[in-house]
Image 1: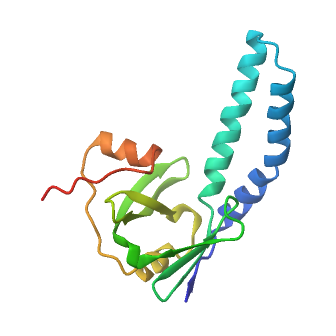
Image 2 (image 1 turned 90 degrees about the vertical axis):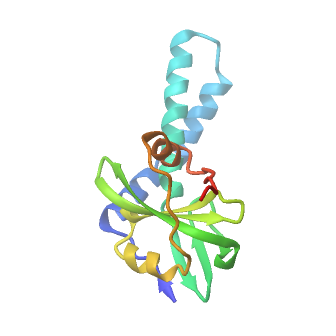
Length: 165
């Protein structure tokens, strides 16, 4: 059994951003409740919605991961009771290097039977990323080169791979 180990930055930023989920949701709800179609209200409400989206998007990648006997079980803020993935349902994995504000880090995307990326593990959050990557017994697939493909997988995360040989 392989368990994920969070890096120090992940613990700090995870706690710091989690604190703002409830107040952020309340502010958005109150803003929508009292909304009067004024331009300044619209811009402020839009700002809070965008910040809330980025907050949730950051937190969804912080997962507690356990890999045992061909199964990957993970818990996150969006899946507090966990979810189990059977690794036999995936045909491969893609390993990429992504760049963010904290520098470059490795990521692993699992590719499902429909030839689409469907699960992401970011090396930014884990001390033992290489151990987690090696515990996933899937063949390594190539991701098509190019800036557009890189931007698609970076921002959309759900990308179809061509089955061209």
